[in-house]
Amino acid sequence: MVGIVGYGAHVPSYRIKVEEIAKVWGDDPVALSNGLVVNEKSVPSADEDTATIAVTAARYALARAQIDPKKIGAVYVGSESHPYAVKPTATIVAEAVSATPKLTAADLEFACKAGTAGIQMSMGLVQSGMVEYALAIGADTSQGAPGDALEYTASAGGAAYVIGEKNTIADIDHTCSFTTDTPDFYRREGQDYPSHGGRFTGEPAYFKHVLSTAEMLFEETGTKPEDYDHACFHQPNGKFYLRTGKKLGFTSEQIKHGLLTPNIGNTYSGAVPLALSNILDVAEPGDKIFAVSYGSGAGSDGFTLTVKDDIVERRELAPKTQDIIDDKKYVDYAVYAKFKGKLKM
Image (cartoon, rainbow, N blue to C red; front, side, top):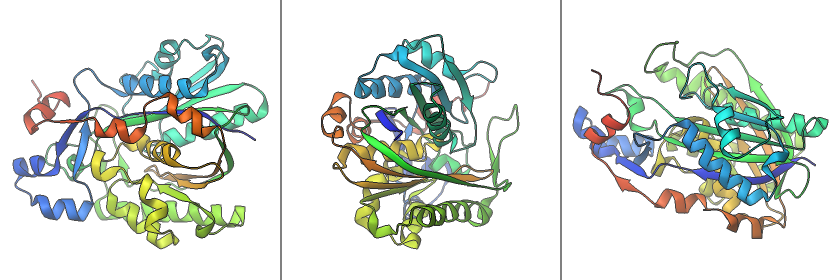
């Protein structure tokens, strides 16, 4: 059974509150916070990008995996904010964690689900016997134009997963995907900020794909919501996440550990990987996990997992996701704009 051998997370320590952004643009912070179910978001500092986030998360994942990095045969980094247009982030990560040069590596892009696509690709390589271990990462320092609604949610963070067949701490029991050409969100080459379809972002984009993938998972595994101890979904905001959980029949107890957006914003490719890492930090051996990602454009990847006994010891070998999130300091809009490069010369 292929599964997760190690996992690690990273979120920048800087935060900006919704009311700080609203103060600049004259919006109602209470209405925004209640409507989006977002209170604050993470902000990458001037020397943080997708590569540094991915490297930190990967090092934590390897610390928990307890394997020789030279055994990694594939590295995939999913993001829509790679630091280079032409130069892979994956090779930077591979070098930084001392992986063997005898590997395949690539950057992936499918909006917010590129990280989970990397997990699926890693599963295939491991199951085929082509590699012993693969490293899949979802990380982003996402963009939002000044004054755009995305400014209140677009944030930074990511998580990494070592995928293998030996000494797993969580087995991946099943995976499936649902994909269509639904262009609700896009950014052309050379553009600084993305465009989005406004009201079309929910339907027929997010909800159609997430709910369709979830229903496929239930059908293909012969399970129902009450068979799972934890569930998480992509979270462009807290409102969509909570609505999805309710529509699918999950209780607030089942979905609470996966909901991170209210305190760190939408980490895009890092959203479901981070939610899953937070669940793994608290899950008990034998627990069942249900996870569905979403990427605009549009598609969703779904996974069901079973937690193994070894997780109890191995999750203590690296910082836990909530502890990383709780280590924070606030900035005002001027510092935020400086860090995010919003000040154009």
